[in-house]
Amino acid sequence: MFKKFILYPLVLICITACSNNFYQVPVAQGNIVTDDMIKQLEEGLTNAQVQFIMGSPAIKNSFDSNRWDYIGMLSIGENETTSVHYVLYFEEGKLKEWINLLD
Image (cartoon, rainbow, N blue to C red; front, side, top):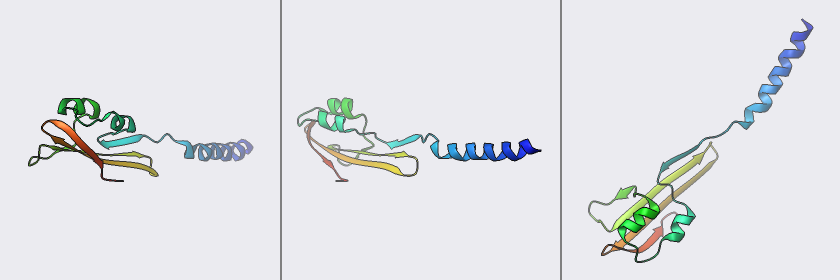
């Protein structure tokens, strides 16, 4: 009986102490765009070169094939969230400019 009074609170303390240190899985939605990818972009790159660097765009505008949108969000747990929205404009099959709409 005495062991129960010591064992149960000890187990409860151990479970409570470990409960705040669970691994929080990063959840990515949409495009993952890193600073290294943006640094590789240069004016004059072809569509294929841009797609090699950045991957497929989240949105290819049906009415304007010269605009590609890269939209994404990365969540880690409930606290840390990072969002990106880059728009790339092409002219005659070459990259003309790129804009970060969230800055």
